[in-house]
Image 1 (spheres, rainbow, N blue to C red):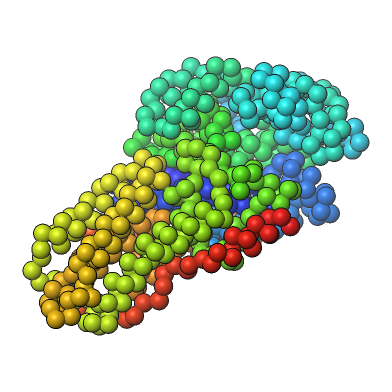
Image 2: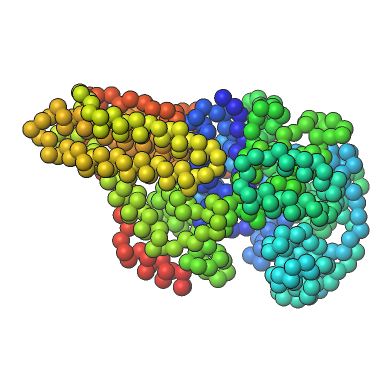
Length: 587
């Protein structure tokens, strides 16, 4: 057994999340975490809502509420949505906790003490009409390096290079289109170039990473620049230096405090378990593994900036938390588009998780993301393809196998019949299904989830073929042989259900019960309202007991276990849903 940290990107709390978001950070991290737990590893899966920064302030002003009121609202919405998807966080928290503030300030102070944070006077963007600071990401213009005309003030999404807003050609405010004014302001910068050699040496040791992540990261290291980690802002973590601590016009930059959330969430989890030092087993044990899940727009923060923060805090002077582990792997997904267009709430090219779950099963979405999501290439979600995958694969393939095998056994025996003499075909099927534990498990462990679920469904196809070839409905005059065929089929269903559990946990629990199983097969997260450990505020978290449930291993079914006629596990979708959903998109 090893300890595995699943560090999941923090959704920004300025609105509900759409299915493109959860295809990058949500479902892939949960599939991996569920599998690793089933395989016997001690998993700590953490994240929370990212709640600071100027975008929150700008939106709160527009809505006539305080930033705290805005993030409180969307924190709960996001928690409920991720709960509905069955994402098995050990702790899903938020960045506005007292614990998070303390950990962020500790890392800032440690980096400062080690000489990796320096003060610089720079040019900051101001809105001429309001006099307020414009955040880098709210300034757009032409990239001076590659010529991309929609580069942001912090980086160009086309070439990946880090930028400052005053470097943009023809800069403009994304809020109102005006040209910003640039004025001198003092800020603190993380000395990223100081880590270039260490980062290169570390990347040289990374094996098995997705090629796009490794290539992108190496390209960035060639031209690292000091990066601002404070901003002219009222909403955020205060700067923990004597002359700055009580200033209400300077705060730590949101990107810096958000990546530290992986550590602060782990520490909060440990404090809530009653063992405040437990987090160290995932962050300081050299045998522990750490996997970070996000969309490709966040690679730079996880493969370059966060490792730099960890390296800088860990040395040369020892700091109070001690040396901290670097990531084992940065697992980045590409983009999910929708009906050929980029997701855009303002242009109504969007379907929010909440709206999706009101009309369709969570596992239908989880299946689509796993089998057709943006694992290594940008992928398009279309309603026609979603319906086809659901009907032809989930319903007609897996669901139909479950239904007809259990129905026939329940009707003819009322229980799981015993297997008498096995034929070569029986034994071959059972062996093929059991081999799936190695093949499917190895693929999930290597973050090849699309190949893993394809392999699992290929095995389901073999079981369907066996069932059709053996035709137990024709064996009414040979009850012994009928019972053997049904026993073999039900055993195969039991094993296939285990193979599919990380992907389809809701259905897996139902199928476990249809096979006469009791207790928890696929543990689910729960929403708990908790008090902030440091200031008493109440907020919802996602957590759960994941020590229970199925293991990643063959378990023999028990002859004599009572069976009842099943109800369908998956819902078939009518042709009309495509027209209805496209009509919704068109307003």
